[in-house]
Length: 482
Image 1 (cartoon, helix red, strand yellow):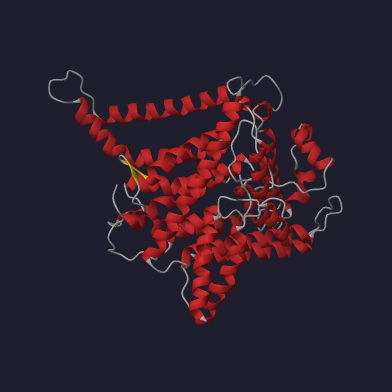
Image 2 (tube, rainbow, N blue to C red):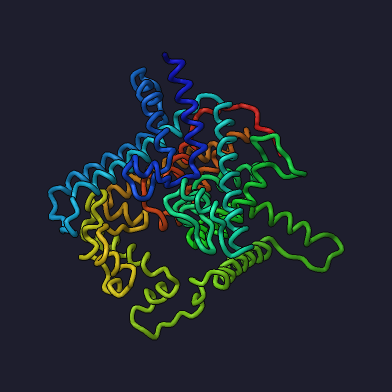
């Protein structure tokens, strides 16, 4: 019986990993009763909970040490939600107070189990290698489908009907004008997938010059090619937060490489016979200036490509609420208003917040005055029957779990760093690559946390879980070098 369960759980794990590119499948949405996050990977997570997690608990099996800090956060979040039952929660269009709370607790438990599984499921080094290979192949399908979308839109200015039909089977929303979304619900979700899982893995493999595949195209490994394709489709999503998050990751890489690059440039510039001599400080300053120019070039390019960014360089203080009006001209004002509302809710309930899922009830009371003039906000508040959300993980944590919950969540993320840094320093490249991947995910999460606020999105749970898994023993030989 145990062998059968092991085979079922192993198969379910690999299928779950393979299905991660699909974020909102209509059939799964009906089964789960969700209108947004409905990844089929969640169904296989349930199978893993039955065939792997419960038997392991019964046997007294070990789990990752990093689960405890996350469990404490989940416990405080549940306490905050339970205490909210004693608050005077404002009525909002007759929406049942319990339904959003139950749904939010459910999404948190889903994320919690994604991390438990990713951090504790793998048992052998071969399991880890096969998992990365499946991730890469699923990433290849994601990149290929996104590039096909870009080919038809930018090449023919429309999509063929068969693409709409195929997309409709796998995503609750169809295809976008000018922006690619692959199998995700929307382009920003595709950017989130890339930044939280795929790009950190491919960048880490490229940085460590290792590959989990034998495939080569001249000097390029499979992960090198996937990284190039992934960066390309990240730009094609036109997700401003997504691109900024990946730039932050690249800046982290630049900081790590700064010393070596400066030494190489110093040797190159100060060769004998050359009249130009520069010190390390001067070269470092020029490199920093170069980084700033590259960032400015990317921002300027976005202002010319993305119509939402056309007024980026036309800021003026000669009006009331100048900053909010500027964000609104960039088609970013609604999101900033949601963030400010979350901050106002936190200021009113700073200790434990208003409980998971309850922030939407407080929007009419704590919405900034300028927010009432925005069309999207006014329509959502007055012409729909849905609760607004904060659209930022960080502000949602503050508003719904207070300073206590926010501190515990940040504490859990910080508790991952010693393990990640220990792996980075390991001489085995196949171990070090997971440490780098985790650090890249944490860096990107700093900004991605201002784009996504759902706990049910599996990507950062899975990537951080894989990054801290202890399956790879010390001293194992490195993977095949590129």
